[in-house]
Structures are given as C-alpha cells and as structure tokens.
Amino acid sequence: MDLRSYSNGNVQILALSGRFDVTTAPTIRDWIEEAVTKEPPFLVVNLEEVEFMDSTGLSTLVHGMKRSREKNGDLHLCNLQQPVRIIFELTRLAQWFEIFIAEDEAVAAFAEKNHA
Image (tube, rainbow, N blue to C red):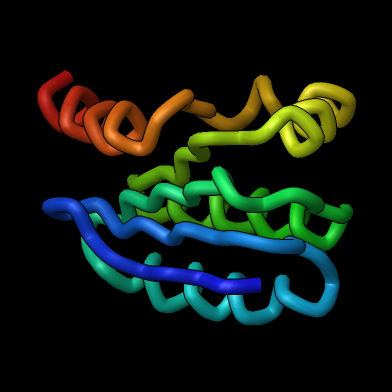
C-alpha cells in the first residue's frame, strides 16, 4: 500500500492506493492518531486507488471516525471504487460515514460545517 498525506487548509487528507488490510491498517491507524491531535481534526481518506479492503481496514476507519468526532471533528471518505463501496453498503457503514464522490467535495463539506 502506498499513502500520501497532505492538507488542504485545515483539512488533513490521506490518499491510499493498493490493499487496505490487516498488514497496512497499523500504519493508517498511526496516521489517524497523529491527525486527531491537530485542531480541528477534519480528516479525509481518499480511497480512489484502493482495490481491496478487509474488516481490519473497515475497523480502522470506524476508529478514525470515532476519534475525530470525540474531538469535534469528523472523518470523510471519498472516491470509493465499486468493490470498496459494496463493502460499506453491505456492512451498513455507508449510513455512518459521510461519503463523497470527489476529494474536493469532502473537503468543502468541512467548510460548510464550520459555518453552520
């Protein structure tokens, strides 16, 4: 798995490619733990190039969502490919996450929350 971390304003973005599974989840969990220390913990995980995700990957994202929400932030997902999107729908996690088609939409949603 390859990961790129960057920011857009006060939003921290993690772009992943490859497999998001038990072997790669610890690295992503570490990124989340570091990211939630910044205020506000507005996180976007871009899954555009992720072709496979297992239950450990799902668990890692749920953990990240909970950790960011504990600190008045959130974790948005974007660019889910069909195999990954199906996993979110089958597990009903799609109703808990805010999932966006594009990264810029996921980032913009945080600006809307700040002004609400």
